[in-house]
Image (cartoon, rainbow, N blue to C red; front, side, top):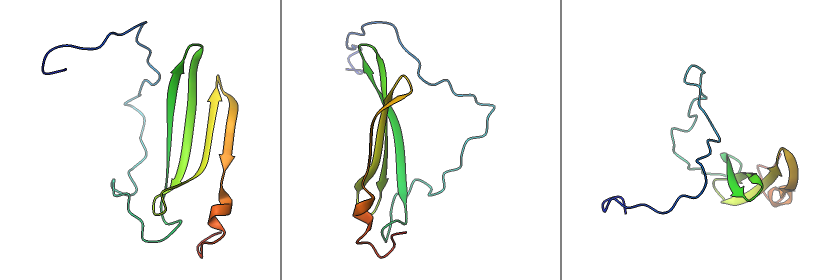
Length: 99
């Protein structure tokens, strides 16, 4: 579509959810974008995102173990109020590295 110079319809006004402050320090990339693990619990990654709804945004976060590609925890909130939270630590019990 970009090559043709066309775009989809945008309804409503554009909403900025994050405005970065370039004067603040940012965390360093501890793994140099190499998301590889050789044993369980060696590297966990987390992400947070949002989904637009009719009444606002639902924020959703996830924590996963890179080696096993298993979702261990997740949560969501609307207007800062938690609406869903789940942890699956029992998945770790069979691991020799479980703490």
